[in-house]
Image (cartoon, rainbow, N blue to C red; front, side):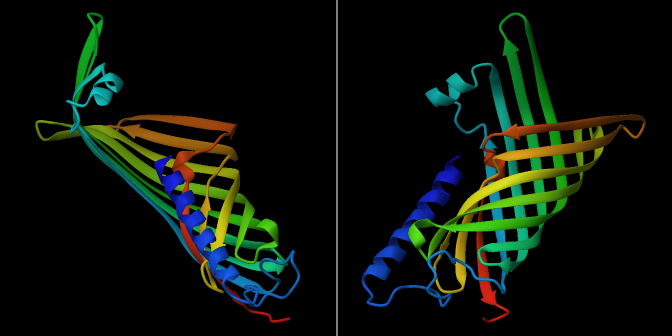
Length: 263
C-alpha cells in the first residue's frame, strides 16, 4: 500500500507541475494531437513501455519495537529475508482515438529465505521452522485493450481502463535443509485470467508518459502439479473471481507514444 501511495503522490506531483507550467505559457499544451477536447491519444499512434515493481523484506531486526512485538506476539526468533521482482514490457497500437489494442509480457520472481521461525500458542502447542527456502519464477503474457478518458479535457493527464486476457506459466520449489540434505516440493504452474486494470497516466513531455495501474477485478484459473522428494505427486486446480485492490499488482511504468500514421 505504501508503494501505491508513493506512486499516486508522484503522479499528482507531475500533474500539478504540468498544469502550473501550462498556466505560465500563452499556448495551450496539446502535444500536437489536434484541438478536439475528447482526443487524448489519436488513431495511428503506437505505444511502447515498461512497468516494474520490486519489494524487499527483512524480518528479525525489530524485536524490541512495541508494535512489532504486538503484531508478532505468537512468533519468536524470526530471521528471514525475502524479495519480489516484476518486469513487464508492453506494446500497443491505437486503432481509434483513445483506444488501443496490444500485448504485454510479465516476468516475476519471488524468493524467501527463512532462517528461523518459532510459533507458540501458550501451553497448547509450539514448534520451530529452520532453514526453509522458497523460489518461484513466473512467465505470463496477455492481450490487452485500453481506453483513455482525459480529465477535464486535459492533454496531459487521463484515467484509463484496461482489459487483459492472459496466460501464466511458472515453476517453484520449496525445500528445507537438514544436515546438508535437502527435501522439498517442486511445482509446475499453469493458468489463465481475465483482469480489469484501471490506472492514471500523466504526460511529462509530448511523447513520454508516467503511468500507475492496479488490478481490481479478475477471473482466474490455475492448475498446479507438484512432486515431493521426487516421489509423491499431486495436482491442485483453483478458479475464482474477485473484486478488490490487489497490492501485489500495483505497478509504476514509463511509456512512449509516437505517431505511425499521421492524419
